[in-house]
Amino acid sequence: MFNTFSFSLYLLLSLLLTTTATSLPTIGITYSTTTTQSPTPPPQPPQERITTAMQNLKLTSLRLEEPNPTIIRSLLYTNISLFLTIPNYMVTPIANNRSIARAWIYTHVLPFYPRAKITTISVGNAFHDVYPESINNLLPAITNVHVSLRDLGIRKISVSTSFSFVTTVSYPFPPSSATFQEPPGVNLIGPLLQFLSDTNSSFLINLYPYNLYRLQPAIPLGVALFEEHPFNFRDDFTTGVRYRNLFDIMVDSVVSAMAFAGYETIPVIVTETGWPSAGNELDANPGYAEVYLRGLVKHLKSGAGTPLLKEGVKAVYLYELFDKDGSGRNWGILYPNGSTKYRIDFSEASRSYLMNWINVALILALIVVEVCCMVIVH
Image (cartoon, rainbow, N blue to C red; front, side, top):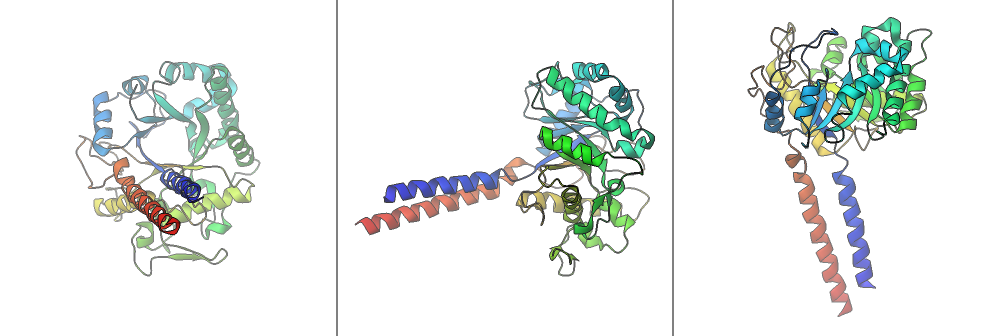
């Protein structure tokens, strides 16, 4: 009886450990080459520059804003997973002609998958902000990409689209009051959420506490920067939840908006987040940027999730890998020459450090139970 009890306890503890270990969000990074929406691909830097940077940062998830077949090819047979974005200027043509979706897949996916670990395709990025007059083309384009993948026998790459938080979510505080906002006469969010639910795909959101902090002067800087001070909090009196950082407020606003629309279980991926280390604003400086990134990484590695999303977001992609020469704001984790800007450990190893200690504690607990069982038997 005691052996059966011990074995059952072992299985329970193992299940607990597995559940805890798999709840941590993936931390990835965005690589982009331009801030324009030009259909002409910009010249790419040496591919070794990207892979070296990923290795130095110990990151294993890469989001490509302007997917280039050469970059994708350079990541064959690596442990780096890829998130691809179809440029905004291609959304309307793809919506009108499925063969264009298939042609894009033949160029960017089929020659490499599954040797390249492509996991997600975003059809456009904040498309509504760039082409508001064409918003009704977005869901047909997503559908055409999804169907084209299935026609080619590819079923493990999810298809979605990325939204900007500040133009998509209304009333972000308190989070319990948040809803999605759409232009008059547009019905996109509901059908899109149904599509995501049907295809087991994620809701993608560009989420910048920096931008919301600048738009809402009442938000304390410390709440935006994950600073742990007694008075750094905001209360949602409807739910009774106390929020101590703006990132969680924004994530839970998305969760509440989806729940209000009738969809509570769709995973959330933060496709862009960061803090500028340079720019025209006083708050865009390297000190604040490092504090934000360090606080974000610590929060994600803790496995705490958010008050309304206990399992946390599925993944977070930092924006971005390199600073751009001549850009107004610098968002890069690295300088343009690839040198280090911040002393932050993004590695999976450090994320699993706490899990290793939990494993040790569980083993010790099991040993104690075994000893107690032996004492009782004898």
